[in-house]
Length: 209
Image (cartoon, rainbow, N blue to C red):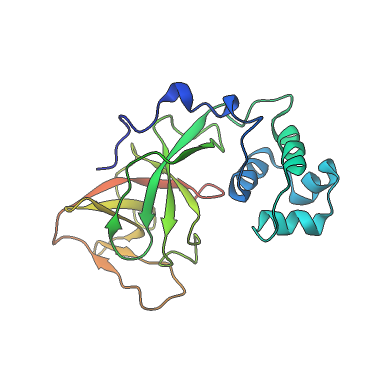
């Protein structure tokens, strides 16, 4: 099962130690904007960038220059800590399609987007399109491994007996994992036959779910 031990050295994962030099990807910038209630237009105004260029940059359609990144960091970090002053380990990938092996090595860290994120939380990259009506392929989700009781309509990462993980919506009566996709080829997974384990509930994408 995906765990916490050995996944991240907390002494090296504090985002405050790297926030003034590390290049952030558009998703991280959007998470920080959301956490601080700053609009893309306001960020563009503060760093002296055309709003259209900012929108393209945050959609990944335009490269953010080094000088622009410096100014973005100044807006997001100067004079205040990150939302909760800590980071969340990105430990691997979770399939949002067919079952795939979960990667259990920490890839990087991202800033905790909200003070309510539990200390044990970790992040996963979504792979596939079976949840694209909710979360795009390549997006990041945050998992609470201490919240494993299945409730109808909530979203979970579930591990099968072979140690493979998937991200789906849980539906009861009957118990099943349901895709939320524009791709009609994805099918529900009925639970109750093969053993499975709940890794945790997904509590964040860009905003709390």
